[in-house]
Length: 169
Image 1: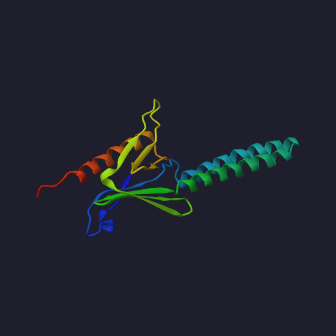
Image 2: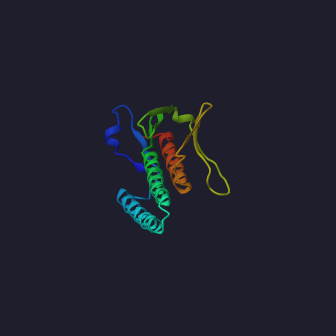
Image 3: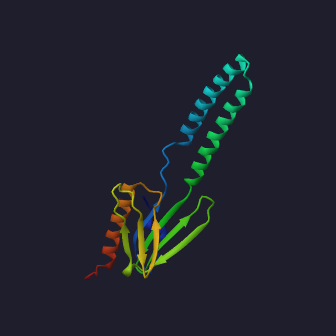
């Protein structure tokens, strides 16, 4: 969960009570990816060279195909990591915006006074985080780890409680 700067999203008519960007975790950096690909290509080249010298040269093509498939798998994984969700709670709405890896965005709005945040309790702690209001439900943060889903649920529940508490000015 990455809190965003409220100055850019806050309108003069309503206060921002919660604002976060949820992104999938990727542990391999681009530099680490190229280092890993170089290691895989080096090992495949040496093994392919050995088979070539032994006269089994067609096997070399399978080593090259292996490197290509690993490269494609990692590129697809990095592409899926470009998706994200933004969650914004203001006085009169909770807005969830989901952006796909291609950049397509879908937006849901919920009325916060009736909103419920529900985190499924499962033995393996891998339950879904869901917001619901007026018979509509939405699963959020499906790509987050269980601990991150608990953190988002706690932070969102706390923000809703603060927002619902009347101020005595």
